[in-house]
Length: 335
Image (cartoon, one colour):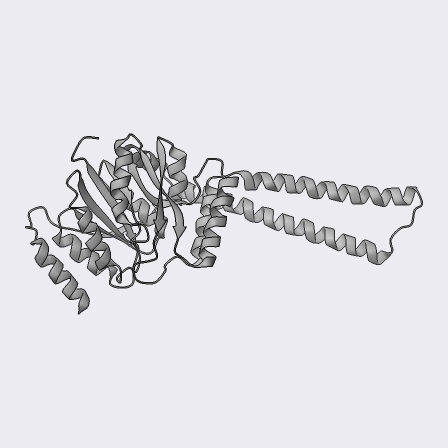
């Protein structure tokens, strides 16, 4: 990698007004790195608080900062995808606005990039989060690793640095429900893990609810595995076999004139078998429905998101002095 190549930092934001001043300060420090040029793409995913006004204020005054406002809340993964579409750097650094993933790790990521790795992804060794979230995440990654048709590294989130070639390859997939870490693994290229300790949220409230985590897990499993469909086949064969054994046992009891269970016993067995088969059928329909829904979304060819507004400093506009802008920006936040 030659000196002064460019890196685009993509940050999705949703109702992050409380953390944005801290985020801005730490990202601004990154831009002082002399070895490479850094620009920033902040994606407002339909926030309802002061997030967009802060992003807009920063991007109108600071050179190399670009704000993207989506027309509504499309979700974290789609917001990231929209940021990739706007990124222009030789590499793209993915970071969440909550600062749980330290921006200062960029230097370590770049060192691996210099060594020839085209994807450098973070692996969380520790998570400073609630117990239930730790259990949920740990279970999700291990279930996904077991059922996925490709190898998706354990405990690796979206925190990563990707070469331009990788980002372009990902965007060619035309995903309608992108699952970033899965697509990143699917495209291949030379990848390496970088371990780090994940911090607690710097400010504000947690945005990922239980339902959002479940949706993320569903996208990961059904987007990168056909094993649920195969499970239906094997479950159907199992139920068919059990039903055959019950029928054979009934016939043998009659032929051999053995003792036959009373009507109540056969009724209980029949109800149990009916409940089992009905549950299997409904579950199978649900699994098939998930895949059919994805086929429908792909066939509809809807864009991942819509951009309603872009904020950046005009090329002919003089940039305000750094110190004066910082004073004005944080004074406005304090007010």
